[in-house]
Image (cartoon, rainbow, N blue to C red; front, side, top):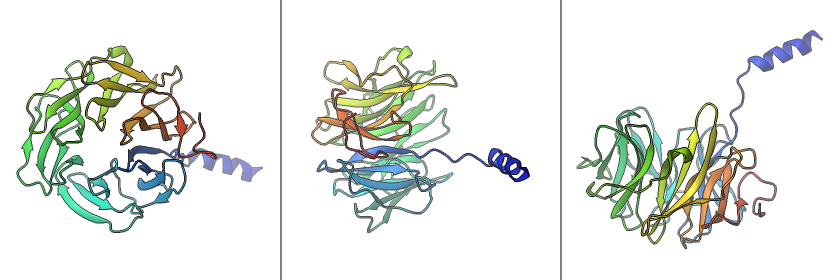
Length: 296
């Protein structure tokens, strides 16, 4: 009896194990593989899986904090690792070989341009962050957003001519903006009602005509989010796979044909990688399922 009591107290005192999270998907250029970050080993590591849910493989094992991976023009996987003052940028082959550091910048979340020679990254505090454009090894850095607001998560268009990003205004609303790669012609793209939540994580469709993004309400009493698609030609905004439950659908990524979107979601009770058609139909769970490619 005493042993049972002691075991119960120890269980209460022990820190809870963080839930497993698979997230931040990106699709290979041939549309056959998804790279993502998973915490299943106890640290943030890079994994890759086929789009049908088979052939999952862990690529890194160094326990460093990692940012969202993506594929460069040579079909190498790019990811970054942050510390308090800088980010290091790496490439790795899909089979886990040839891990190589290719750059280092004094900021957060570096995103390599399609040309492989330039990148953007964030500097400053979380409340007054800005985007900086530089060459790969931080040569000729140029600040391209202002100092009076917070900028979140910049993404390059497929042709490298534009950048989409999220900007927080004085009312603490978060909207998606687009600008030219040199910082000119900045304009607000989303005008989604504040009741829907904060818009962020904008990623370009392969043809450059649409943006997929996440819009969510995050508070102590409510956590829910949806994937939306914005048509840049006519300004229409469509919510995909609408739900009333407190699900988090986040971090979208386009398939190269523009017909499907991968994203992270906790619809199954844990954060996993899912896919759906670009109109929100055909939901499929890819990771963290006994039958990962089954329709949901």
